[in-house]
Image (tube, rainbow, N blue to C red):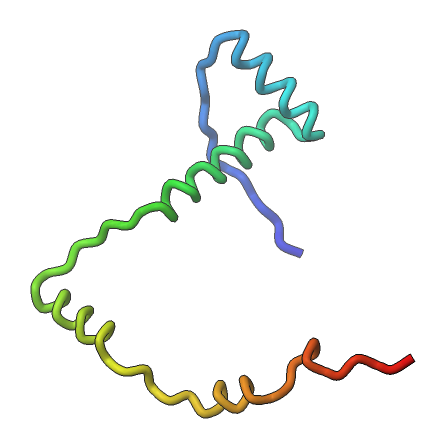
Length: 96
């Protein structure tokens, strides 16, 4: 079983109304305030990080990137064979 050891702290200074709102929301979700804040902060962080669409390439890297995009797809025989096989939902319906 994986154990999450939390040894780092983040302290927040918030006004009483914000604390009340966090406590009420955590209570509705059946979580501690710390769990509620951590889950929601991590969710927001992951969204921000996933939304990063800008990356820099020098001229040589850009040319290699363009060449990879323009190259024809390579043959994947095992994948092609798999795609020709009938799937679970492709089986004929059982007659009653």
